[in-house]
Image (cartoon, rainbow, N blue to C red; front, side, top):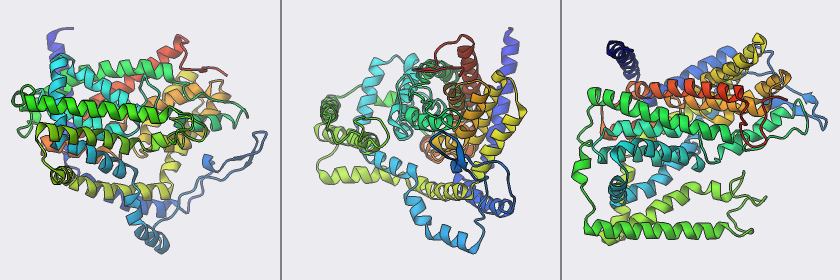
Length: 525
């Protein structure tokens, strides 16, 4: 292909992304978007509540011992625009905010991470990292860390994503490109991991119960997609590496100059004697914490284990306490580094450093309050369930060939993902419809789940309604205050489209070659 064609394609892509950015930046602040979403949801709930739908709500299915359906109810929209509904929403608005899942994760993790940043431990660690990692390999290293972070649940959003900006800034690169790269790895490649993650058993539980609607006693292994998702992590890494270095960062350098932070790499220099002493002490304390935690987990009677003895299963205290454990894992080394490097003198300096890091979270708290109210109203209205069930019903009625249906499941998942953030919530709705439907066509539950995971992951990064989207935006604004919703959307769109296309092709090729999806996995019944 000629250089002229390449230049034309680049101009076309840049024009498309610039258009998305202009339109997106005309949108109001995310907090206002969520409030408008609350109002629209209330109005739609009132308009659709009188409508009687024929589709069955899979959450109402009740089975007997033989697997026969003994009770069910159609999907229905709940009218929230009533006196009782509005008073209930008002009365529980504070609890809705305090119980908003991302809120606790972000604030608790930031206590430790913020202290480690304020005392200089993170800066020292990044200097050390930059001496070991060639600059050309910084991008794939960041993506790899983002992919590994899936094993820790949602903590990648509050640990790896801001670290991406910090590392890129320290290396003299555009920090927003680092944030985008890490965000793509954490959220866009959510299911792609060569390590088992908490998402595997979470989805497996819904898949197995859906499969038992057709075949009572049918079991699904939690790692039934492990091999395929491991291979997908390689595809995600290569795609994100290419896009970050060749498309995203050059465009950001031309359109969004950082506010004086991108040159920190030269200013950081090498480790001083005090920093080296503090960093080595911090690393030693971190190692001691890891050894202590492992030692506490090893015994069969460990309080970190679930009742069934597992460390990663549902109800395992280790998984439920992963966020405070990570906070401590940053807090202790940060304190040790601070004392040894001389950046803190006493406990008052430590508390002041933690408070300073929390001062940057004010805007996020406002957005989180509005996001929590929208999430609650949208869930209570049942509009998300209606959309998912209607879409699945249309897909079933089309009766398309197997390969086309698989692609249809992927696309349906991407569309539903734009409105419902939780992967398990979407699969709780779609699984009981799609899994039995595909089983009746001769396709195994493991295959259907894999298709869902492809679609669910790819569009996480291009919806402002994602619970962590406001947080990512606030991270970007630390380095470039002009960053708006449109800027972030246009930056993440190439990742989303590339992941969706390449991941879909990989699944179809995997199927065509009859490669195992994972442990005890099948394509056909």
